[in-house]
Image (cartoon, rainbow, N blue to C red):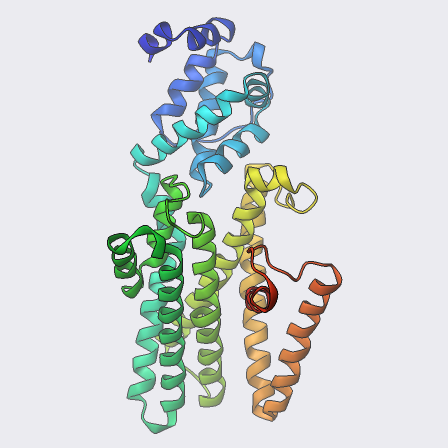
Length: 367
């Protein structure tokens, strides 16, 4: 690093001007994890020790986010010297985003951590759901309806994921499409999409949308066809059978957590995306800037989504025990009021560039 900084005029100038810059850069490029601690010192006053702490803070920020750009943005917001550095030399923010991609790729915690969390949870959820489905099948005629419902749910999820994969990759050629379909039918589309996002893959040539948007759609489809229905089915089995086995209760808990995690992750990633915040500051920005505050906020989002789903699922099951008409009224009121608010706000039509009835149908499905 010292040799590179000596040969590069711009880096040499920064090293000479700011005492802690080289230690900041060295610590950041190491990718080693450490305790993040806020540094309020001005850029011109940072010491070598403070520069090292700033680099440590940068690694922690990048590790905590799915997008490298979001991690660097968080780093900037939380550290005064970094904010001043990027404001004075805007090109450095872009440079550190690219460096962050390399840190993620080479660090021991890198892609494994980022691809792992939500993706592993999704795969575990599918495995436990299949286990419960087979239990329902072995339970005889009395549990046949639960088995069939779970089978339809899982089948619908795979089918919708296949459709999304085809639409997304049909312009990339047969080989690329076949590769993506291979991951999809193995229930590994979620880890595959997360890997692309974490690797910093941009909008691929021939692809319909960028990897982050594809991941969001895939996660949404998974929630709609497999995650939420599986929770409702398992709650129904728990209520109407008068109990469940420990493994079935574990599966239900995992499904609730995965649904909450997925919902929270989608909201959190969009809100903390620096591009989204720059383009629509009035809409995005409810997630605070501090690392501890962001952790609390993310945990709160997971808890709220999980408990709300549990309450709604139990409510629907109890309503269905009285009359299916009540379930229909509940859905009509719940979804109808949501769509009405969207229409009143002028926010019903989705952003995809479609016209006529196609635009209305796609917007209805998306909303």
